[in-house]
Image (cartoon, rainbow, N blue to C red; front, side, top):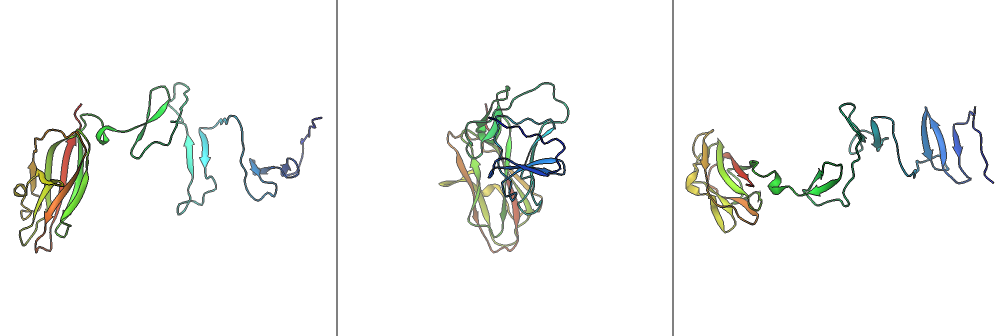
Length: 232
């Protein structure tokens, strides 16, 4: 036979369910669910969680707010909504570099961006070069089917002595996108050297590198900007 316990007008701060069960506790007006020893919080299982507040879920609510111990709050916009909606998450954790997209009906899925951006959108990668850089400087991975529209080398600090040179390309074809005669590292700070490769897209991705021949110079700094896009 079921028993009903009337707690009306009780002054007790907590109620334990069964001998070794959970403890429902009042904490300055908030309901806490703790273990039987009242020493730690325990989990709550239900079929659905509903919140009447704009803030729906606070993760790690007792965070110290220092080091790596911080809260995460999930909330809805406080204004601007015009209809209810349900957001359904993907069936997996996705792969590195994928982004979360929606079908317009609230069904989210993982999507791999084309070339790191939308078709026809121009992207720019910047790599630094210094007088004491290694002979091979890793730049970035050019996506498959991307077209390099422009390569620009900006001299921030001119090299002073020797005959340092640089090229831009890939392993095996180190001058594919910029030859050694296209840049004067000994120019004036602020000089900009621009090359338009006019090469067809490669069906495979490419790992671009700067091939650098150092000199006796103890100063020198430049920025290499590669402009590229994925034509539709």
